Length: 352
Ligand code: MRU
Image 1 (cartoon, rainbow, N blue to C red):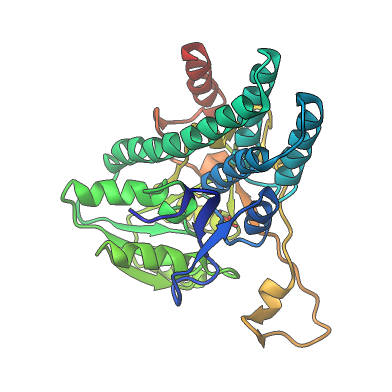
Image 2 (tube, rainbow, N blue to C red; image 1 turned 90 degrees about the vertical axis):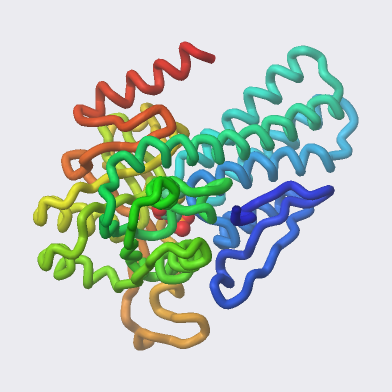
């Protein structure tokens, strides 16, 4: 399986996703600051993967912290959590993972644990978040594969694969599981301007796995659907509001509207950690606006004339009415999402 992120000795190691597919380079982060920078600069990206990275970064930072006594240790812990929370605003998995780390810290501190014991517990929790994410992706794949007909041509947008999670992938996990069941699947990967996650990362992952992959620019999706060349759409998510409205990579909304127009089923695959019941609808999801240079330049080459204004919202919101179902590790949820998502998360809380 692809090595997205791993804790090795005194470092968090991650494949540099800015360099793929040209170079497979690994970055070793030895401090929490380096992990935060890796998230901000998209060395690692994808909602579940940045949650895992933040958790590991927090645990690493506290392992290296030399504050004597839990008081200063607690102050430093809060600072590291704040630093991680400021890296990227849209993917709720980041905040979910930070909250989990905060709960572990509070329980350990309240129990009078030493700073060393607290660091141990934080590391255990971070590793658990990683492993749970892989398991969630596998389970999602199992449920989602049942929706994929043999011979299907499946369109996906951005990269919701092994690289965007701790492994296996959410949307690409569904495709992988369908392929593992022996189905013939052809994937259509939107290139995903401006960071090109589809062209660079999704295509790289799938080709490595020997899965039939065709890259298109997003503007080609409409005519392909009209020609009947796409049977279903599966995408990942960065945050799913309580009513099912879903934030995902910019361009997803356009695909969803097109799919609706052409009666192509449109599915979202995401772990429960992506569902945010505290956000009532998509209008309240914070949308990250990234550096204009991602649009005005391709590598070092300038594409736009100096003086042209640039917008670069990194995500959009797909209204829940366009979503045929939400595939999670607990099953496939259908409209009305307000009820089905609430029930799904309540069931998890009861089990805990
Ligand atoms: O800006 P990115 O590359 O972090 O955006 C990633 C996406 O939008 C993914 O589709 C989403 O995080 C789902 S990942 C399983």
